[in-house]
Length: 465
Image (cartoon, rainbow, N blue to C red; front, side, top):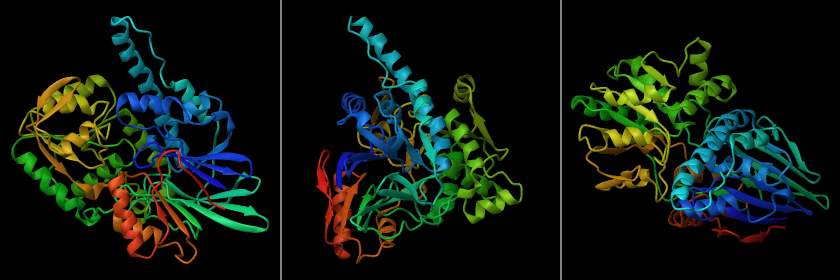
């Protein structure tokens, strides 16, 4: 078995790892690389392998940096099965269609500029129709059930506790009568977070591919979520401002809505209007309701008592662009939650353009912001930011609350890896993290006597056994 890293190597996006097994090749994840436009276009459009040569894909979860290039893979010749959990498939149905729509719109916008310069047009990376073609190849398996990937290779999903349906993957390779195990964490979630269950053990493995997004970093504890949110909103409301929350449509939005629900229910939060301004988030929330098997005990009790944890009367789900624009005219305090989570596209840009120069406004950051994104610049409180090509003076208050993060921090990752028998674990590869964070996590693992921890570069290959 040979392991080849072609995505999320020394960066946090574009998860894509190849396994060459007994003459066949499978893919762990097939995500979109997100970064500078020219580099992202080149890397997403051109695979470093023949898609038709891939026998199967095993998908950890639905986030676009893990699933988002599947339609392009299929468009370029892949015809095998795409294995995932049932909730992951349901989320991918809306997320990949939405991504295809964005690809088409981006190409249309760019082609208008190219036409003015008398340059040839570009094709979208893929379309909603390509996304639909990819969905027809999805095959679902519940958690903790073994399934065949290749003649001598089986896989099993365990709950990763990151978003609905997210999974870590344990692969069992039988050769010459013996079995070796390879684990892939996918994205690891956190303990004591709302809605979904805590991360579960994938079982013992010989070799582990681990995410490292927050290596060397610690989050505020989940117990601080309500307390900090109450203080933030009280400050914004007191000065008559609005609260703008960039949030990923899947995962973070539902966590935040559930927490707001709880605060309203306990009488801890002033009853200001809350708007979820993202058609994708609205649809994703409906999918959350379809999968109570993923809920933790607290949410299960709510559902069992016929309470809807996502549909409180104070929370308004905005579907139309016209209704979204009308929020700009509101004078009284309110909160708007909109995608994209890194402020790179979508309706959040209109809300930021409308409020970033108002000192009464609060921009509440609740998720990871990759380098070179508008969200990253806001987190670092740049005095000027560019939105839709225009420069704005940032006068709004920026508040970062990492207690809402759905990614395990340094100690939580150590806890997750600690569920694997250290006597069996021979080798660890760190992916899905900026290089500085990976070095910090490599050091943390070394201090706990994990001897063989490597940080692969893109394109590197390793003979496993």
